[in-house]
Image (cartoon, rainbow, N blue to C red):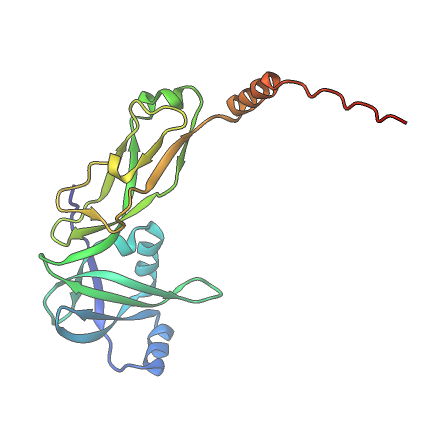
Length: 214
């Protein structure tokens, strides 16, 4: 399930502080920093447009990147923060954490749902309600899963799917100890209305109140 590690091209940034960051932005760059793994932090900058494209593609912060800095060895990194302009919602700064093969890291992993056609509940008109489209797992940096899979075969209306029902990739585990819900099969609105009407019809009618004596 491990995916190929994509490259992320950046360049070293001279100077730090707000003034240097503003200068980088004027040049069409997004300032950032890479830190961790017992080494000194290194200020860097990335071209704005390619970075924005990657951010809009999704899963940027759950992807292991091969950071390429001119004059330095390639290094594996995970994005640990993206600061954005409060008005335009565009990236203004990015933080990266160095990792190595033995690193254990917490990442949000995408959830795929398959075998919809094998779910009796969905066949009856039920709706798949996704509670968690992503699940935070502790994984190995050497083997980050692209996704986890939820099999909907045999699922009936009213059933909930918990994290304990899912086979996780080897070496991965949830960061939350409890058996939380990922999704459920909700009844179609027509069935809910019919059930409500049946329940109302089954209730005994109230006896009319007796008139008070004069």
